[in-house]
Length: 150
Image (cartoon, rainbow, N blue to C red):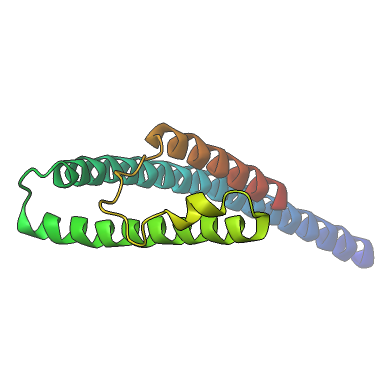
């Protein structure tokens, strides 16, 4: 009978360990879900802050482009952005020139294009709400993927 008692005790011990392991797995999964939700909240807040910074930058660049006085530090950033817009405009003009050379018909219009744009256009900034919606969709997808993997 000692054999059966030991076997019964081993089975009980194994069952207790299995319950403990199951509980630990459940706790870890619960923690992972909570952490994923908090990471999603952080990501959404970062995206919202970035959208506000983007609006602020757009405002100051518009002030700069309109010739209004801006803080010297902001003016330096705006000047660098203006230089980049000039590079973009030049590259776009080069693209049109290349297309015109290949196509033949609009060649005259491409040759009349100025080599350097006189003023950089004020950029059209994307709607910050689009960033927030995209961030939320990514956060949900990440959360869904984490739950599936666990």
